[in-house]
Structures are given as C-alpha cells and as structure tokens.
Image 1 (cartoon, rainbow, N blue to C red):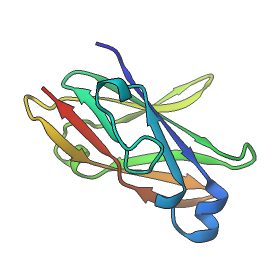
Image 2 (image 1 turned 180 degrees about the vertical axis):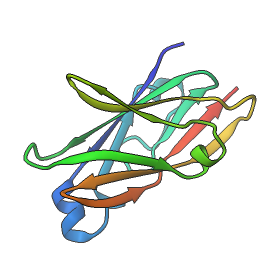
Image 3 (image 1 turned 30 degrees about the vertical axis):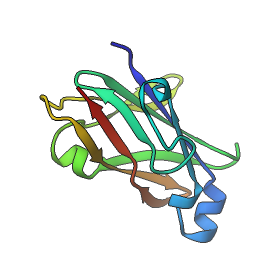
Image 4 (image 1 turned 45 degrees about the horizontal axis):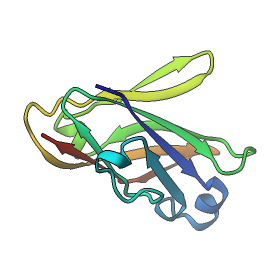
Length: 131
C-alpha cells in the first residue's frame, strides 16, 4: 500500500495580511486518481484506506516566507483515526500518520495548525476513508 503525500501550499503574506488562512491555502495530494477531491483548495478530501500512511508537507508561495506545521487537532485526532507526528530529517521536517480506522469508513475532519512569522492559524481539511 502506497503512502499518500499531501502538499500544503500557503500564501503566508496573504494570510497574515487578511487574517484568513482558509482563503490562502492550496492543498493537493497523490490520490486524486482514487477519489481525492477539492484539490487546490483548503478543504481537500484526501482519499485513503485503513493502514495507509499519510505524509504532510508545507511550502510557502513566496520563498521569503516562513511557514511550518505545528500541530494537528480535530475529529481525526480525537477519534484516534490518524495521529500525525513530526518527523525531522537533515532535509527538513514533515508530518506523518497511519490511518487506523479499524473498519470505520467515511469522512473525518481535522485541523492543521500552521505557524507563520510567529502567528498560529488553522484550517480544516478532511480524510475520506474508503473500504
């Protein structure tokens, strides 16, 4: 079973200026061909299956901006369906978590907390867990 890579692209300058992260986040993943939807928007529905590992990375639109994932919260984490952990490598940090739905199918919303220039902001995408 392949990992699912999720890329979060952030217009940090736009988010900080407007106070709105939701309208300044663009998400894509590697599972569009198996059912992910809302690609390019903040509320991406990432298609996945029980046992799959999801890997989240974040990148700013502007190379001069500083943005990092600092936490995951929400239904997905509270229900322990997927509890991402930070992984640190010499090439940079990313977050990964194993889907442990134990037979549960459907959507699980979660919140991603991003920190930009010292300010924390959140947005709320979904996992779409299939059988």
